[in-house]
Image (cartoon, rainbow, N blue to C red; front, side, top):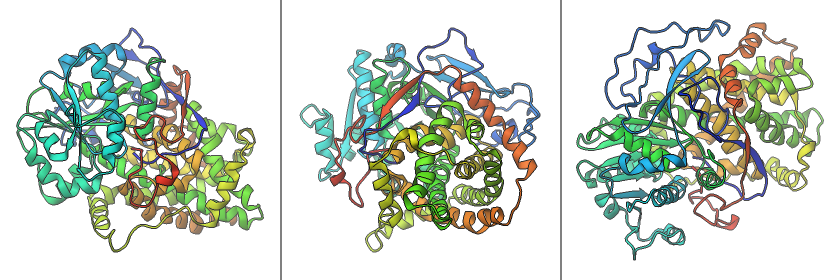
Length: 591
């Protein structure tokens, strides 16, 4: 839920075409619908406080899974998160020896929306930042296609400039689909709370108080739970609390939904959770929501695990990590004698171009297989893995402890005195403008050293999340799919710095805080080790080559045709945004 761009470039984005007749799959896609990745081990997940069903789950005897001994494979494990749906069909996914339940989406399931959303007469979309325009329009279109008269209404401050944008998308005061925030909350049976994290932290007591008994609070990010845990607060017991979190930016969510009208299966997959089930049907409400906004696959998580992986992920490879990587490598290459233009091509362009496309279509390991100098790749990988993982572990534990959430809330309160400056004004990013203007896509280099550093950070993030108990589906969506199928294509169009400057406050702050840490560790530790002639660590090399994440990615690539997604401004989003409208403090039109 990061940012958006205005270029006409496209990137290959993978999506589902058909639903197989069987209920157990052995292979699925590695891209937008990567819901097939397996669930984490029983011991780690058994400690979770809530499950997708919203009810306590009695874990079965743990299956011994050799995460760190990647060559050893366990028998398929029993899914730890059940999906207690009465309406939709759940499927057991078997990838890399672990099991997980998922629910497939598709327009043929819209006919089930009346049953899933029984009693939901009014849906309130609160906010108009990134996810709200996309989800609001998708939901409205799906309900119409299902022949339902359920109203989708947008709630905004009367003074908000976003009112005009909402009206342009067909939400109006005249038909009761556009109104004041708390008026909409009070009358809604499903409140989709899609305002900024900072606003949620400030306003949640009043929002919860305004909801009617038996209503459903819908979140697309678990941030609010972290805030409430930090405050020692809990949700009202007489409401449902669910999560549907599309794994891509708002423009991608809208654009692929629209493409799905022509090509079956297009969409952005989502995680879902039922944190609290007061009415007994919260699971089907959440699944109906996910299917209605166009998710080809929906997989189970918990509210707490979602906010940990999401907030952590954007500080890592999604934004902060890649930002630190490219700045450190750019300086290194210029110092070694490359021209500024070539240094930019061998860093930013290399990552957002050929590396991203390769991972999207063939997986992470394929990058290693494609580089010209595998020894150079592995030297860079081996030197960078632990310096990146050091930061990632610290970052995860800061998020887990809610320290990072407190930091975001406090920083937002300082904005009047200390507003955020822009990242993309330095000389490097000015060079990038020239490089992009003159780009010849086929001539972008695949630099072996750059590839090694980037893959090291991505794999370190995957391993950190796995060791912290996250399922493969959540790990791969937050650390791989969202990067290569949602964020990096937009970075390719306008640059990494543009993304960092135009994402949510939480992501923007996190990237600014953690990117310098990656930059420092790589320059002071990884590159020094390489320059001193340190050879690749054979153990790290084998762990990379045999990591079970590659099995999941490779299996999931097998069934996928490709679909291009446009990444120009306004396409797929509710906003016809021009570059001139972007200024500091404005909401970006992405997730």
